[in-house]
Length: 120
Image (tube, rainbow, N blue to C red):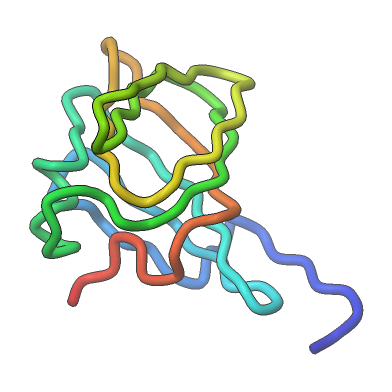
């Protein structure tokens, strides 16, 4: 691996569409991936990504930064939080999430599973 790597979301390595209501752009860099997700109003993980993932809840970890919009994340135990612009969140596997309001939620995720939103 090179000592310095740089890539841009202007030219992602891959784009993974959700069932509808958004997509994830993927950059592979070093030993990991960085995702830029755009979740449109009305998006909910259990409706729009569960069919792709094949699980009832999201089983990917996340370490994300919110650029715009708002999203609620609810853990399997019922605890939840709402994140919005300039928020950073670490989310463990076992959760659902949905967009709040009428603005798309755009995030950059440095901790997602490399298989997040990939068709199986």
